[in-house]
Image (cartoon, helix red, strand yellow):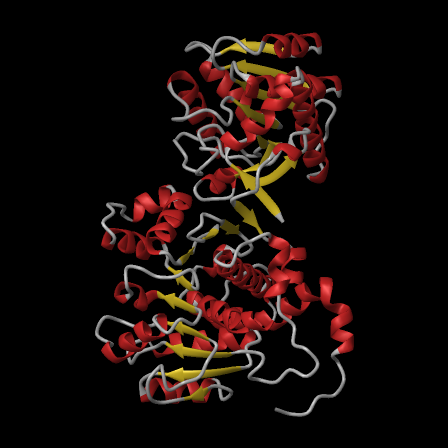
Length: 531
């Protein structure tokens, strides 16, 4: 699991070591890790080390010092190094070490800016070490113009070198992921002590590239993380697996209130997602025309009649493919939310929900839907504001509604009312296709229905009861993303359909679950009676 922290938390963890006079050692560890990461990345790309050209954009603070010391290490390995001192000065000790290693330092002046931008654009490696975790407001003045010029020159270059951010891309807020343009987008961010939460949330994640954490000795002083990302090993532990004597009811029954005459396919895709995510049984409630399509497409689904109260289930999925004119379905959706059972509320159900909800209700908006939700609660956020600071928006919605909020996006965020948040980025941009969200709702609904069978597997996450629902939603988002990537890989990286994602779910589940469940799989593989 990846744990991420705010810049303030990381700086607080550094304080005991700084007080003990270990500031220089921390900088050396960071710089050494940064230099090694550059070497490793170049080798992975089949690029040379000796004779390669490196330009480090160095601010005058500790972040610039990290970059200059790293450049000194790389100069000793035979790289041709230039430091652009963006504030006219650099960290004194680091600059001296850089120059002793044979590096060339240039002050950023108006006269030199054009040549320095061209040199950086042609370099094999550019290290962005201008602003650190404490900086606010982004780049300004001559350094902002320099980054703009580098970005434009790189765009027209025949071969682009590697851009490495030192701790975080300059202009990205370490806490929230907000990005104050211009930002030099990195291929690799080498961050120190711990991942910063702003690197795992959009738009910061847009600029971070791959994130590599270098341990520097502060780790034992870090608090409990509020932002986490589940990895494959976590999914293997958290995914449910049926016991030997399981039956369809013990494996969870999901009620689905979805689809409409206008959007009947949403109900089908939600059911397909849930079926592929291991639920024991589905009861569908909806218009007769939609029910007929569900029967034809998913004969395993039981199409029921009557009210929410008439149908015994362990969880509900509501809202996919519903509009404001679908009064009966909307009434059922509200009844499901108020039933006290775990419920995933998607799309069309969101506008009609009560303003006060509970953590076991999982809302799954995209940015526009979340903006509308926040506005109904008295906020002024529009879609652009949500997209500019996704982490704050998701946490604000969870806090104000009392529900668990899953904000769909390239980095999908899941926020609990307590503040615990997950960021999952397991998918592919091909998942931006009609119906993909319906399948995701089905996956989460299936996991909610199966939650009662064994919540003990979530104890490893150190969460309270309210945080359980965010963890389950993050598990669903990760599984859905991996299935989307698998579906795309099957077409050699090509586009996917929502149905293709649903088709890829069982195999994706199987590959992930075997990381920890191979023994259980063998034990439970005996012949079972049909149920």
